[in-house]
Length: 79
Image (cartoon, rainbow, N blue to C red; front, side, top):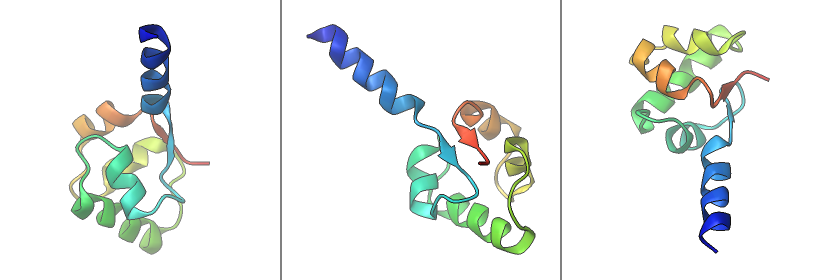
């Protein structure tokens, strides 16, 4: 039915991503406005600086601004 198809779509969009453990591929596919290049920056930042303590810290990564964070903040988790 149409309703169950809608529910399934909503579920797949609400899947959160742990920015401390996700691979670049996972980050690129899960986060809006984040492609392979920015995803690789996130991973490199994490490797250089250690785990993100809070989702908002993703804005410290080169190429990830406040608008990208706002679009994704409901998806981002750090543990």
